[in-house]
Image (cartoon, rainbow, N blue to C red; front, side, top):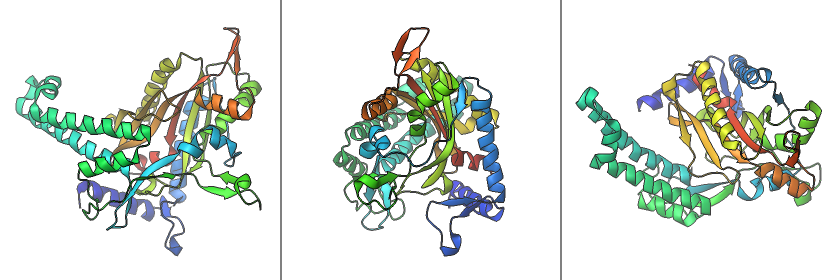
Length: 386
């Protein structure tokens, strides 16, 4: 067992033994990727949420709160793109019967290539000492260049395949990289296919499509459909934000790594409404402001990093993750996204109701642009349960 795997195992055991986190329905052998917070866990999680709420809402005159319902009209998810585009590319191994995210298998191989390049750089640092020029070495050393260029080429192929929804190309990349099942080493893969992540249920006793409801896969849409209600009732002027803490649900087929990836989780997010054309200014502002928040609560700087998105969501024109070094590597802790005016415009079009703001300084109406900050309350938990 690797040192990181051993640390992760100890963290899971510690969380149960000391009353932080329990497996849901454990007496019935549990429910995969669903967890309950124990007596100490709920106190810690509430403290994290309270600290976030104070920093985002109580300390800003131009950010207000909301608590939207989990159930929403099903047209909400058609307008947001979730009905048609909220999919993960999945692949099964025929021998192990295990299911994986195809894009994550490929990303792990890219990380390995980049890790080899970083290892070469670290060896050179130790060898040359203070005289070492890292930037020059990364652009001239043949081995480093080989690893870096190969990683970039595969990343470009993955980005193109994801943007086109080209599942056949993703299978080809897996074969070209000779990717094996992490558990068994088998290369016997199925075709890659799309899987929608939304849970659905029925409204009352009405059967069929007309009665279908979804458990919300994100909390953002409750903010967007209430944009004018909040703006008019609080008399906020752009720029202003709406913040919310709430549960979201995703039918994660590949749900592992304890509370990092769950089917029921809690988001702390804020949508900041701005003038069109000012999105990059505010994107940069919130990117740095949110990183500072993580540092101020005591997270070590060397455990955090920014990671730009290569494959942007359909609603975004810029996106970055604040990643934390979990026992299983650097993974997303918080996302900052420039969502343009996609959401408000889509809801305006499908509902037939205007979602415009009258700007008294410009003397004009417009659909505001949005910068989003979204952090997982559950993902904040492990870093403070040590």
